[in-house]
Image (tube, rainbow, N blue to C red; front, side):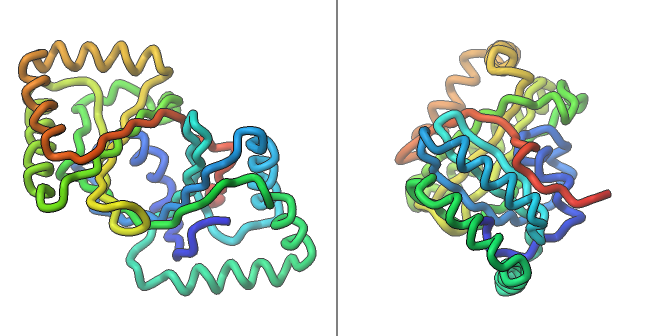
Length: 254
């Protein structure tokens, strides 16, 4: 049920923090991640989640981190070293399925009919377009609310988009604003060019209250100037909100 890509366990502990915008972004490398997105039917969400938990119970062979959005999309994420490892994931998953035999068939039957569709792809973390405050506002475990922004960039305007994103980083650094974010580019599996970023809060109320403080500290006129220039590079812009799902994740044993 997960993306068929080699997992590098040492990097997985950072996945939650990277996606939710909580780590020192400038200290991170341009890490690749394999992502599988499943659009779950609302009436089937409980059944789908039960199947994921059963998959973990049956000893799925690779660690993964899960996120869900309020509109019932589930994101399964693993760090990868390169595209070269995809076949190794297939091999590990096939060996696991053969080992558990009938239990695997029952698992697949239990999840049948719970999703509308799924997409697999690869994204790359972009530390140069990400921002981490000098003193993080939240502890890693406090980021229970996540806001994602999806920027579908006009073809040919990728450099212009990146330049404006860097200006946001520079302004945030100069004003020492409190809310960090992490930026990614989608390299396969979706309409492209596509970039997205993630920011966190303790709750939705906490997130929006802090966002308002950031805008005022940066200066509302300056923020509007940058934001309008940013939007001018896009053909479409979408947002999603959700949360990390440690209950549906398989972390490596320490």
